[in-house]
Amino acid sequence: MKKQTMYTLPQAVKKLDINQHTLMKWIMLDLIEVITIPDKKTGRHYPYIGEAAIKKAFDATCVICNKVFKAKYPLNAMYCSRKCRNKGIYINFKVRAARLKAKKQK
Image 1 (cartoon, rainbow, N blue to C red):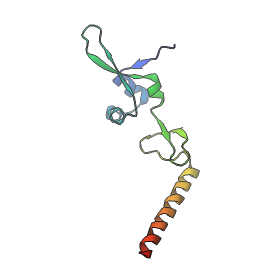
Image 2: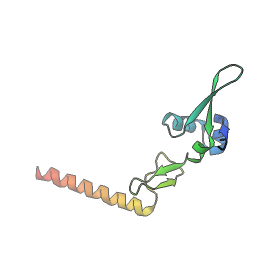
Image 3: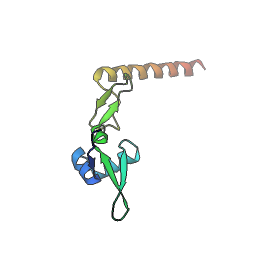
Image 4: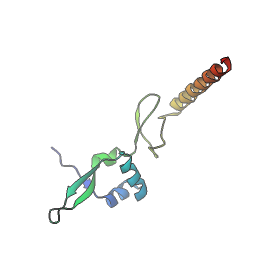
């Protein structure tokens, strides 16, 4: 089994090139998995982030085709391409039109 590289929180911030508050937000939202390892001398638990979690940090899933893609801002990402975005807009338009039609019939 290959040994996984572990990063401290400041190292992960540098590796991901994001703000420390953003990293904490992603940890609180369970977008990044944190592993706590106890110190051998004091027994205090220190947080570490695995290399696999850092590689998956910018992954997002398209709401139309369920494709996993890399996004600059993964919290706000919804669509993997313009085609899926246009399809999503069209679907939302149809849903709104149906709601308006149902309201008028009442």
